[in-house]
Length: 384
Ligand code: NZQ
Ligand code: ZN
Image (cartoon, rainbow, N blue to C red; front, side, top):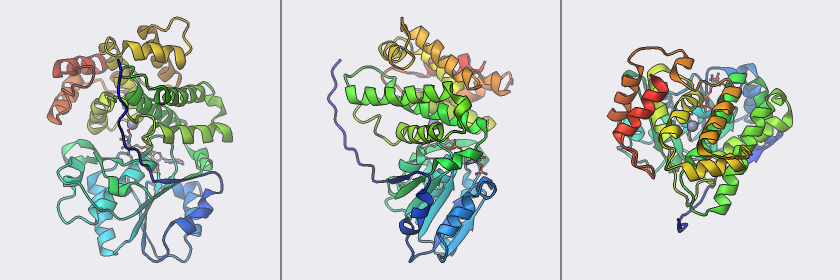
């Protein structure tokens, strides 16, 4: 099948990578405005990142907001928005993982919006302006530090929504792999799998002869597989810097330019976090194998290519590739079925399907012609 590449690619986030990157904060954060330092539950206070960041910002007017939770909620972020408005904040510095980065993007937009903040999350309002954002990344996984996506949950209605806010794309992202030393294994496992599935969502569709995009996707996937195979070296600098760069490249937009993308795994998986607060990476390893088995025909050619190029299978059948993906997740102690995440409610699949339906994500079409019945079969295979 032929395909005409047609795209516009512009990613202006400045990446400052390396062990000395914190020293650059002083130049990157404007000195003539008040800064909101946004962070999570306190890991940065325990691992020395907070001290390094505040030292680099010495002499600046800095207001802090702590407590952005994993899978950030509208309820918590609303307090940060109120603070930003009252304090007349001019720059937002998020220090943390994807949750803090997403929270920073939301606050940057909502601080300049007088309506209900949920309008931004639900896509009813598309912000044209945002306060400038910078990110100090402490957990490589989502790629949020240099993309325009964000995910926010409204706790009161159990809704977790993905939204896109180009004006809040971070101006810069500090990627210092040394911060990874304090990460628990669970977060490293989550990060590898999240980045892996990000590439899959852009690569595992159908072949369009995109040699550069395919080759780049395969390089990132192979890197992530190698990092899983060498997990015992996770405290080494080389291992850490490779994961940090791979996770960034997986979702900075470059892998997916001009090729058909899919994102069905993410569309379903967000509901598992909304319902049971399961870590994002783990929701993906639960949904994706069932999804690939259900969509094996439309994805067969790409699965075979992946089996050969990423997993080095001698006889790369699509079934063997799915088994290899599952074994890869298991090697990282990830669940590949909902019950392995401790959820054994009899109506679990019904609840997931009802949520996917309610949020308009049951019949996504895509290259695989996914209708509501297909989505229901995927959910029942992963969650019943
Ligand atoms: O809150 P603190 O105390 O900082 O602890 C965090 C949190 O408990 C901890 N942590 C982070 N860096 C650490 C550390 N602990 C020790 N040492 C460090 N250096 O890790 C825990 C998880 O952090 P979180 O930010 O929630 O993880 P992640 O980066 O995986 O982000 C997940 C969120 O991003 C969204 C997910 O849906 C989820 O809400 N996503 C965002 C995307 C985007 N914007 O492009 C795409 C993704 O597909 C994803 O949906
Ligand atoms: Zn993800």
